[in-house]
Amino acid sequence: MTQKFIPVIRQATNSDAALLIELGSRTFSETFAADNTAEDMADYLAAAFSPEQLAAELADGLATFLIAEIDQTAVGYAMLHAGALPHQSSGEKPIELVRLYVSSEWHGRQVGASLMQACIDLAQKRGYRTLWLGVWEHNGRARAFYRKWKFEEFGEHLFQLGGDPQNDILMARTLQSSDN
Image (cartoon, rainbow, N blue to C red):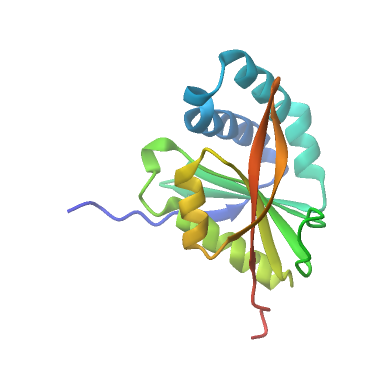
């Protein structure tokens, strides 16, 4: 029988910058390196997970990072960012799920589900009514995961990975208010 692990989800602080750089770079690489050039991956990782970029994101009052830990080891994380939906949708009071990544050795072990539930709970508690995200059109595993969580496709947008413009599918779901 497989041992069940329940991650502890905590909100990141400024002292987690180095952890988020390492975890973010590693999980993004695990997910996308096989399908992209080394040059595009290196360019993207250098920009998206630089100390300056992470410090700016952690200091952004509209951003929230959640870290999933098992036995005090970080195994996944999510980033939420409040703000408007892309023009293709008219969802009410939106918040974006910018990132949700889990270390490959923890795939299929409920870490992603725990992070997603924590994101939904936090968004609802803060009064957001629409949770939206962009997911690479070729990431079938992630798209299926989001559909399971009642996200529906509503458009597309460009995601620049190094020198490679890629197509992301935009998905959203309505959230219940916390007083329902």
